[in-house]
View 1: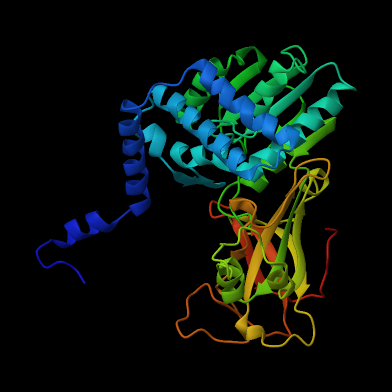
View 2: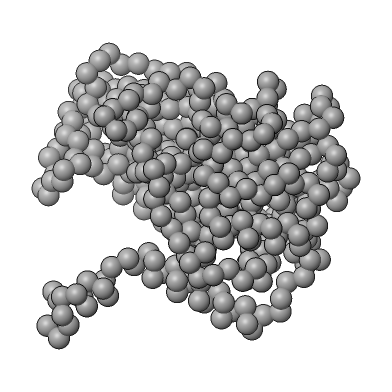
Length: 417
C-alpha cells in the first residue's frame, strides 16, 4: 500500500534499488570505522596474509584460531582498501554485462574470509607451483576476475616468497579485473605486500575477452555463485583454457555440477537445527544427504571439456548443451521434492571443496521446476514436468548466466563426471 502523502514518483524513488542502497551504506560504515582505527602497516598486513597461508599449508585443525586469522586478514586488507581512497562509485558499482554479473568491489572483499575456499586453493597452489618448478625454470600465472584482493593467490604467493621457495625470476603473475576500483586496490595491496617484482601487470579488462602475450602455466578462476550462477565463470575459464601452455593447469582442475531432488524442510532447515544439547550443526547430516534423490551429473568443467563445449547458437544468444537426466524409476512422492543443483570443486591433487563448505558449493534450489504438481501461482518461467519425463540442461552464455532446465525430447545421456 502506498503512502497517500507521497507522490508516486517519490514512492518509486524510495523503494528502488535496495542492493545499491545497501552497498552504499556498507561503504559509508567502513569509511566511518576506518577513522577510529589505527591504519594498517605493511608488516601487520604481511603477517596476517602469511598466517592464513601457513595455516592452510600446515593443514592446522584449530578451527576457531583459523577463523580468527582469516577475519584478521580481511580487516587488514580492508584497511589497505580504505587507504587506497577509492571513489564511492568505484567501491559500490555493480552491473550485468553481456557475460554475466560483475560484482562490486565491496561485495568481492568478503571472499578472503571464506576459510575453506581459500585454504583449498592455497594448498593447491603451493603443491602445483612446487610441481611445475621441477620441470620449468619459470612459470606464468594468470588470475582473471581476481577482485580487489586477489584472495586466492596473494597470501600463498607471499608465504612462498618469504620461505624462499619462489622468486620473481621463477614465478611471473598477471592479474585481470574489469573494475577500476579493484585495479587501484590491487596496486596498493601488492605494494604493501612488497610483491611488485612478481607482476607482469595488473590489467583493467573484461576477463572473458582478455588475451595475454604469452601462454600461461596456471590460471586461477573462481567467479561463480552457488549452482554456477550469475557470474561469468564458465566464459572466463573457456577463454583462459585456450591460453594455457601444453603442460598448463587450470585451478580449479575440476568442477562438477550435479542435480538432485530434495525435501526443502529436511535439506535447508532440519539438518541444521540444534541438537538435544543445543548445539547448532555446522556439517551436513549424512542421513539427510542420503535421503536425496540423486539425478546425476549436469556438467563437468575441466581443461578438456572447456575446449570441447557443445555450444548451440540461437538467434542472438548462445547456450552450452549439458546432460540429460531422468528421475529414477519407482521414486515416490516426487511432488514433495525440489530440484537443486550443487557444485563440488577439486582445486588440485585431490583437494576438494565439498557441499556447504563454501557459499559457492551450497545447493541452489530451482523453484520454477515443478514435477508432478501445478503451482497455485504460476509464472512465465515455470517448467511443468511429470516424474516420467527426462530433463535436459543447458547453460546460458548470456548476461543472466545459469542453467536452463527443459523437458527432454531425446534419449537420456550422461557425460563423464
